[in-house]
Structures are given as C-alpha cells and as structure tokens.
Length: 312
Image (cartoon, rainbow, N blue to C red; front, side, top):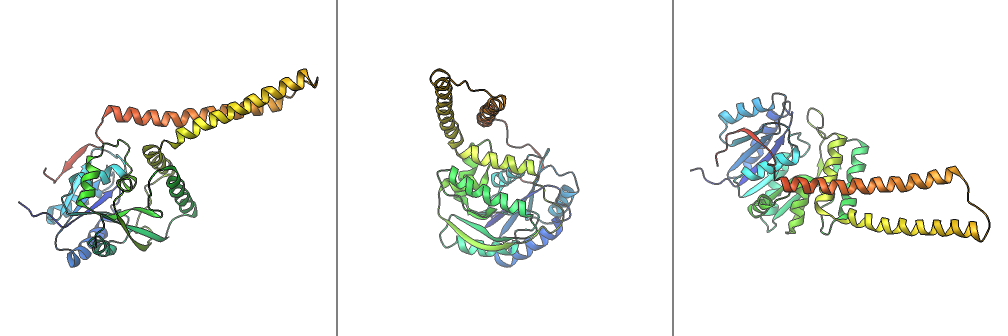
C-alpha cells in the first residue's frame, strides 16, 4: 500500500499539449526539492489535441502522476472537482496548466498553511498577458459578487491555492450541482491566509475561457450562492407597480380635471418597451434559478470518467 502523499497537485487540462512537458518539469522540480512526498493529479477535460497522449506517456514512467480522462468536455470547475474527489494528499493544491500561476510559489503556500490556516490563497498583484476587458470585467464581477453574497470571498484571486484535507473532504461532501470551487471554499468560512504574486502571461496556446464560458461561470457563482436577484425582482416589481399607479392617476387627472387628454405614440411605445424589458429580464432571472433546480433534482453525475490510472 502506497503511503499517503503530503501534497496532491490538481491540474485541470483542456487542449494544453504545448504546455504539458514544461508544466511537469517545473512542478516536479519544485516539489522534489521542497516536499517530502507528492502526487500530480492531471485531469484531462475532454481534450481533442494530444494532451491525453502526453499525460499517459508521462504517467507510464512517473509513478507520481495520476490522471483522469473525461469522456467529453465537462468544464474547468468539474475537472477541478474530479481532482479533489480522487486526490489522496494531506494537502491539495489547485493550479492551471497554462503556467500563468507559477508552480514555484507552491512551497511558499505550503509553508504558510503549516502556520495554522485551513486555506492559503494566491492573490494576484498584476495579471500579465490579459486584455484590459478581461481585467476590468473580472474586477467588476468579484466586487459585484462580494456584494451579492452573505460571506466574504477573496478578491483578485483565482483557483490557485492550497487547502488541507478537512477542506477537501468538505467540498467532496457538498451536493452543489453548479460547481464554483472558490465560492464553495469561501462559504465554509475557515481561516484563510494569502500570498501575493504577479501572474505571468500564458506560456503557450490560447485561453480556453470564451466570453460565453465566462458569463456562465459568473451566473453559476451568483445564482448558486445568492437569492438577492430574486429579492431584487420583487422590489423592482413593487416599484414598477407604484410607477404604473402614478401614471394612471396622472392620466385620469389630466383627462377629467385638467380637460387635457394625453396623446403621443412615442411615449406609449417607450413605456411599453420599458415594462416589457423588465418583465423579460425578470423571467430570465427566474428561469436561471429554475434551470438549476431542475439540475439539482435530476442528480446527474458531474462528469463521466473515460479512463484513469487511479484505483479507488
């Protein structure tokens, strides 16, 4: 029976063939020199390039490499969850395969968590190689998200962090259908430490987070942890009802008392457009909640493993 590793490093991978060898070299170099025992849990999220082939080649000669291969692309957060489900270390590190987050920071994260924290998060000072639009939208999202939820989530951070076995077990015991790992960790409320760093630009290749994926990710985070959008709809409904009453009273007073009938096709269309837009927006928000309730009730698997060298 293999002894339990001190650290499990979880790496979600989707079409990262140009980064895998460099990723392994940097990870193995830094871990071998600073951690007494470790495992690399590489999760292939349905890659269509040579990523899985390269992972299996490394795993065939490196016992420290464990891999999980999905039957299709299930998404970054599901890949991270799979790694957490299958890792066996006393501590777990989450890091992306694009090498924007430096593996060389892992020993510092490890030393920090040994001082008594349950989680230590790598906090970004700068984000190289990213567009101004992505930087601004990310900053706006996390500040907006912080206002929408009833607990504190670290700002200017990603999934790059280390957590102890207690946190890993808590995440694995959750039944959330829409996965938002950094939100779930923050929700637990345990003591969190921070280490600041400058994020590098992507080593090779292009980002896999399209605008549509970023929007879905944001919706999953907000709707999974907050009911405030529904409260907002209710309050907006009361406000618009009050506005409607005022408009009706104004029309009646103008017609019967001031003897001046309100006319104007433009004003009518404007009012109808405003009310229709609000109704559609409200239905859309309610629909997002209903869709997630449907997913929760169906109890489908988060992901399907096609092959793996990890035995339960």
